[in-house]
Each structure stands twice: as C-alpha cells, then as structure tokens.
Length: 325
Ligand SMILES: Nc1ncnc2c1ncn2[C@@H]1O[C@H](COP(=O)(O)OP(=O)(O)OP(=O)(O)O)[C@@H](O)[C@H]1O
Ligand SMILES: [Mg+2]
Picture 1: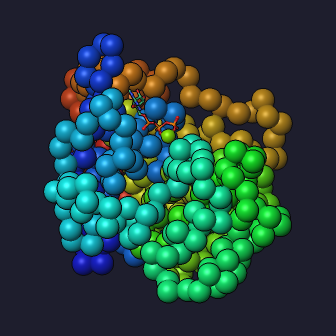
Picture 2: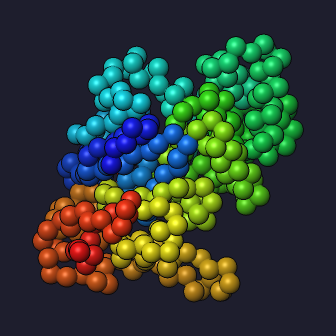
C-alpha cells in the first residue's frame, strides 16, 4: 500500500542472519507503510523479527551477524538502502529517531544525560544553553522523571533500567524526529509512567505529526496508542489491520491466539492461555505457512504452499489458507 502521504514505505524487506547452522531468514518479505501522524504497532512472539525489522530501517542491524538481503526502504521518497554511511547520518537521530530495546546500547556511557539530551536538541533548535536545559528538564518531567535537574547531571550507569528507558525516550524526542522507531519503549516502566509516556507520544503524534513504528509485547499499549497493527510470525507479517479491527475481528489464527493469551484482569492469572508449541527457527525450511504446526485450523495445503495475501476488508490483510475468499 502506497499513498501520497506515506512517510516510511518498506517493501519486501528480507534480512538474513548467520549462525552455526548456516544462513537463516529472520525477516522474510516484510512490507508496510506509515504516514505522518500515524502509529503502526508491531506485535508477535519473541524472535519473530520485530527488532531486526526496526534496526534494518536505519541499517543498525547487527553486522556481520545479519545482512539486508533485499527490499526497499523509502523515507519521504528517498531510498535509504541506497545511501552511504554519511548519507544515513543525516537521517539517524534527526529525521528518524530510535528507541532501542536495550536502552544501554543507545546511551553514551561517558557523557552525562544532560549532554546527551542537549546534543539531540542542537540538531533542530537554536536554543541558548539555559533554554536547552529548561527544555531537557521539561522533557524528562513529562516522562515522569523525578528531579530532572539531578538526572541531567547523572551518567547512564547511575540510573535504574526504567529511568534509562525514559532518558532514551527523551533523547529520541528532543531531536524532533518525523519518524520514531520505538522498540519496546515502555517494558521496564510501571503503569503510571507508561501511561505518561504513551500520552506524550500521542500528543507529539497529534501536534507534530510524529509517525511511530511501535514494537511491543503489550497489547494494552497497542490499544492505547496504535492506529494500525501488524502481526509478525516467523519473520513475516501474517496480518495487518486497524487497531479496532485487530481487537474486534482479527482473522489470522495466530493473531487470535495472541489475543486469547492476553491476561484478562477480571480472571485469575491461571486463565492465561499461552500458545502451545514453539515458533519456527530462522534456520528451519521456509515451506508453506510457518504457523501450520501450531494452528488449530491447519489444512493440508498449509504445509506445502505459502498462503497468499488476501483482503478481509479495506485496510485489513491476512495471509492464511483458511481465510481465502
Ligand atoms: N545478532 C544476531 N545474531 C544472530 N541471529 C540473530 C541476531 N539477532 C537476531 N537474530 C535472529 O533473528 C531472529 C529475530 O530476532 P529479533 O531480535 O528481530 O526478534 P524480536 O521479534 O525482536 O524478539 P523479542 O520480542 O524477543 O525482542 C531471532 O530469532 C534470532 O534467531
Ligand atoms: Mg526485539
């Protein structure tokens, strides 16, 4: 799907990883688009390729362990895969900001938090040093960081995991990006801080047209912030729908299983229904539907042929033999 106002358009992205067992496919023909002001949620079990997809958008995928084998990544009409390292630097942290899954890898251990936020602020705003400090404190306060002035003088190792996660968010947002790639940005946070974080993202989305690629295991966060949801399984997007449709009418058996595994606050925790079986290894043969072994609706052809994309309704796509029109 491409429309005139699509800010990021990823087409047929394939990322290979190297392991002792050879070369595997961790991202396998992934396509999606995100418009300005839109949030796309990416959900799926551990190892489904969410982080590698995000990292590959700005070519921060681990090297030499992984390689973008094919595909196209267009940002604002520019093909990012054609840019050299210097060309990419003009985008990274500026037009496109990343909140990585491991906050420590995004922080510079020898610079104070204040220096790192001020550095990001310099990219876009011609502020005085005093104003930079004020804006940095304000950003931290909005992410519910207590005593922002003290945190600005701290080094990353002096902060807790949850605090670091908020600081990484503040640095990413200080650069006023047009696209934010947020990989599990709120996992280490308690619910009130998480709510404040999501509220700030929503505000930036509305007021500044921030586009967000939001990776999470938390379907509650998806419900609160995402406009659309892409479900990944075994490196492929198996379903894509608006958030409302995803929650009310998910079509793929894997999406339905994910939704069933949602903890229901009205029931005791033993009601949790995990999905039986294991996700496929990236090194396994990629024949047919990769969910077939775990699927309650499996048919003979599922094991032979990859299910084609079918349209359930406008803006709702699924890859499943049991859902062919
Ligand atoms: N550095 C690496 N070296 C080798 N293989 C890797 C590396 N990083 C990822 N992979 C492989 O790619 C697959 C996808 O990894 P990825 O980190 O994208 O998963 P994910 O969906 O983000 O999982 P999680 O929910 O646990 O963060 C993994 O199953 C793993 O086999
Ligand atoms: Mg990940």
